[in-house]
Image (cartoon, rainbow, N blue to C red; front, side, top):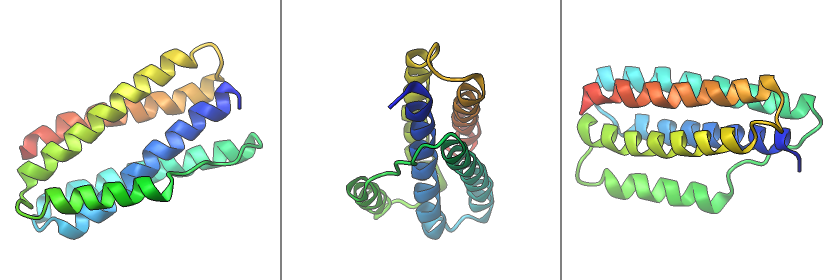
Length: 143
């Protein structure tokens, strides 16, 4: 697989994990203001996910989504961590940790594929990176 396909699939998987996670969390969260914020976050993850899929298909690549085991692990982890604490503060902390992991992976992948991927593809990766960094800043308000 070439750099374009690998970078696009990273964006596709990262945004898919964001969609899956936020959908699950919005079912748990009871605070309306926090839920409103999460829904706006979900919209951006869905938009990035859709764009990555379109770019993959346009370039003749198959999208490689998150495997079932990883989805189950994420689902179980969220359920376990929110069993006793469903507060916006606790859930924000969980999401900040996830977004930090996304930032680290995004920076690594941008450096790795800097000379291999086309500008529009690295641009989508940079959009996801900025979005994750912004999430971290905005989630601090709910801590």
